[in-house]
Length: 87
View 1 (cartoon, helix red, strand yellow):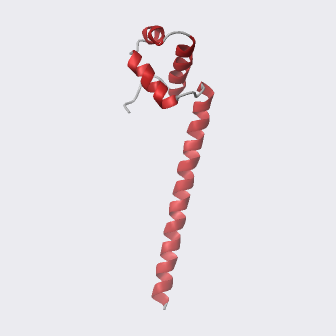
View 2 (cartoon, rainbow, N blue to C red; view 1 turned 90 degrees about the vertical axis):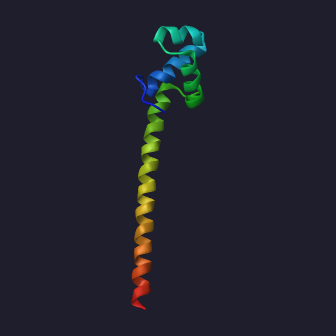
View 3 (tube, one colour; view 1 turned 135 degrees about the horizontal axis):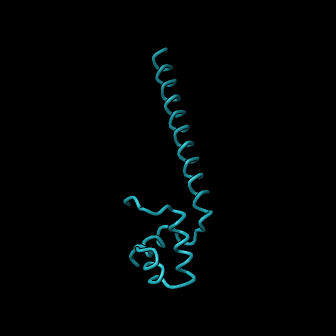
């Protein structure tokens, strides 16, 4: 997905606005296409603007945990290789 001029929080806020009014009206007001609004709806679904921050935090935490797991697996493989060479 290409970089947007809107933050994810702004996109979700526009989606919630489109829930209250019409997609066409919100698209006109913010100078985006209706298709853009529908694409955002597919991506963000029923998230609230505040949920985006929590989602980012969870994605960051998940990435950190994946790195830690990869480093641990590498250390285990290294120790196994050292152990094989000793005998």
